[in-house]
Amino acid sequence: VLASAGLGVVIKTHDGVDWMDRFDPAPSAVSGPEKFAKLVRFFEDGGVPVHAWCVVKGYQPLQEARMAAQVVAAGARSLSVDLEPHPGFWGGGPQEALLFGKELRRLQPNAWLSVSVDPRPWHLPGIPLREFAGFSNEIAPQVYWDEFNTPANWEHFVASGFSPGVEGVTAAFLVDVTFKVLQPYGLPIHLIGQANAVRTAGWQHLLDRSSSHGTQAVSLWRHGLTRPETWQ
Image 1 (tube, rainbow, N blue to C red):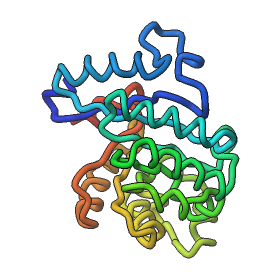
Image 2 (cartoon, rainbow, N blue to C red):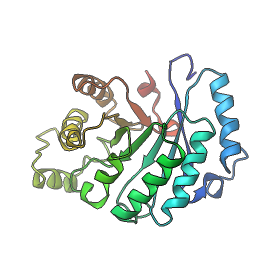
Image 3 (cartoon, rainbow, N blue to C red):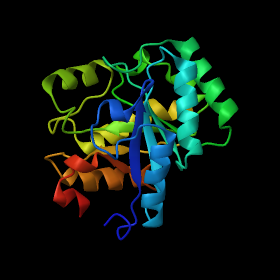
Image 4 (cartoon, rainbow, N blue to C red):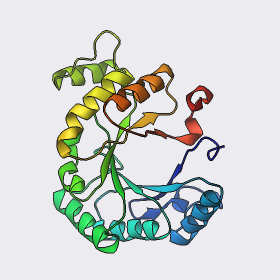
């Protein structure tokens, strides 16, 4: 189904320094680079490009970088590094970010790296995005218009200089804000939309608005939550 639609797949391989089999009991869960390489062959043989995803925490940056490099070596066409200030995510500082980047680029100098962030403006100061942007190829913001459409978020947006208006946090509004706050980092922006959004019309708005900003592709998170009308 993915191949017929010209789609690729992004597989989460590790979280911090733990491979995903710690959290997923399925036999196909990623337990290391060898298992990931088997998944790469399975999808690529079926005409589906394979990319990888990981969460970075910064507590053991060198080990995290080495695991990321192993994933790239196992066949990932790109690696998305999930960098967020929320509990269970990034806990290091700028120095740990630089250590991670230096080691990863030493091991995989030509890998395509995407740093994925929560683009709400008040969350960006909690991560070393400037350091990550220095060794990444693009920024992949998580544009979740339904999840972010709450009164508390409206107030935060207004306080940050962005008024959602009477319709609240729409996909178009969020795309415009995201480009405004992330373009100064000087990297291409690859949007990740909300797969289970109730306001599915937002997907067309996301595609139209992102195209007007010059992007050529978008992604969605995640497959298991995607509404049938969203695939259409």
